[in-house]
Image 1: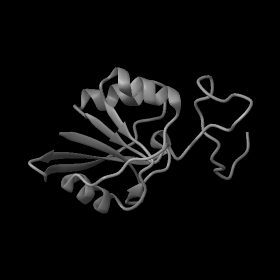
Image 2: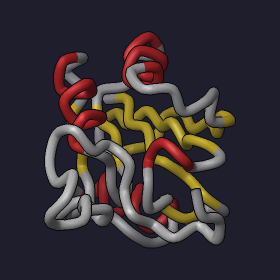
Image 3: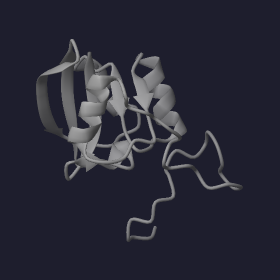
Image 4: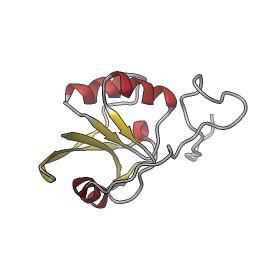
Length: 130
């Protein structure tokens, strides 16, 4: 099984599309058979699901992702596990043991205006204002 984890400094990135890199691992018989870290090729809507699908990824792990991204991954038969935090190595270990718990997406669109499908950026304050 091939799994991609949005990675930021060795930890699971809170937002899958904005992470600097992805850790891609192959797990066979509860063991890691291959692990590579690749730079994020760019955050264009619809691009990452294609990119990861072409690499054979079946599961995407991230802190959070927008609704639109989740739909696009679903269309590529890539299962998203969201609400995951912590160090990549611990997450991989939990994954191998079948103990990884996903949760709610960590980036939830703001309530009220633009809530739901038409809004696919989340409200993280990243130190710059539009």
